[in-house]
Image: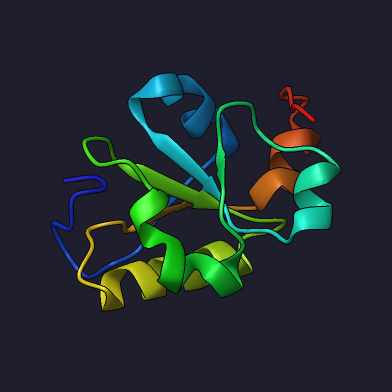
Length: 109
């Protein structure tokens, strides 16, 4: 069951899959402030990876969460942090915002 901790495995979605889900998911951008300022996915919540453990409560409940970063490495780490905190957030966007942009998908900021 996507995003609600059905297993300990990480789930990777493509940018197209994330785009198709729209408001049905909460996007969390775990990049640094300067990366966020250079452009992000509209509607995403910004919590840099280094602050995620302390700011997890900023992620609203009730929807599956999809983490993303620049290329996918930090978003995978974000899953580890969330799962270690006992949260069911097991999904990230493969390729990060780089793949999102390469597919011509819109960004804000």
